[in-house]
Length: 97
Image (cartoon, rainbow, N blue to C red; front, top):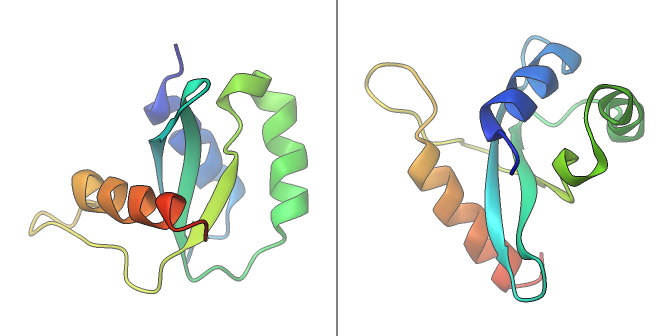
């Protein structure tokens, strides 16, 4: 069991301040699900971030994919719309992006 909130919290700390992120899971026919991250303003060194994530999290919690989304959907409260981001990531995953 992976805490997506914990992964997102750690990822947020490692990304530059202007990069918005959201961590969701997408279906995997073999494993059940994969952890993926959606990021906006993707101007960061992904290899460096992954290296740091590997120090903080177990292998199962490391995002398998980073999807750059130009406009991460937000709710009226100013928080990321998790369900919409999850839908976008699942579509991208299905389409092999």
